[in-house]
Image (cartoon, rainbow over all chains, first blue to last red; front, side, top):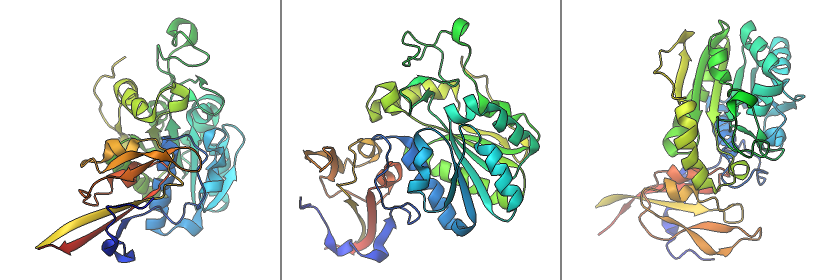
Length: 268
Length: 76
């Protein structure tokens, strides 16, 4: 359809202020409409492009919705067994210390089956960047309850809401790994508003800069939505996330330059 | 008088119609179209001339379908 408001005189390459990163493969993403994965992928690629380290970066994709990340990111990628991405990233970083290594994991991958690998890789202080997408649910397999599911939150395996006495408390793995001495930078961000997207990009940039200085693990949690799993529209799910996820998973830096940041009491 | 003008170009075939860009736009430049693309999604489209090229919509678009242009144009 012809856009009647199009201003063709400013459609010149020198006037472009934003376009999709060239490091994203020109292929439709397999994610649901409104999923935060796409934005997180794009910000990651923009950071690599800005730092001009795309030829020296190796990513490790997880098992979950983002298992096909290697199809969309035009850099070297490896697929790890479920939850084992930090172990694989350790090996890559030790074999190629001059390369940049990151893992991109979801909450079912990092906080459930891969808890041991995550905690030990963080405790050893490997010089890797871990990007953790937390949507409080197992999105790919059909919205089952994950360790990060909020108390009272409905999922396909907790249809009456997560009952804490029988199903346990949600796991704040980001706060957990922040206690470890091998971890240098821990932050929690989101990608649902333009401002938060910019902050996330800044955090990713910082993590890769710190990896250059061999400071230790940089851990970035991105609180994301799962509108299919939560059975909401994308806009509703972003609102729900602001109202319910953020009081529990508070956004902001948790550990900067190896020092924990004092925080207000979390709302239970 | 020189004025900053912006414009967006939406790759409608790649748009999945999540409407996140509509919430992000400070000038309500974007609305959903009544037509659908070949995948059957209602796609986002530009409906007025208020765009300043702030890139908010392009930043939040999960599929990166929006390209933003910004230029100084002289108006009488």
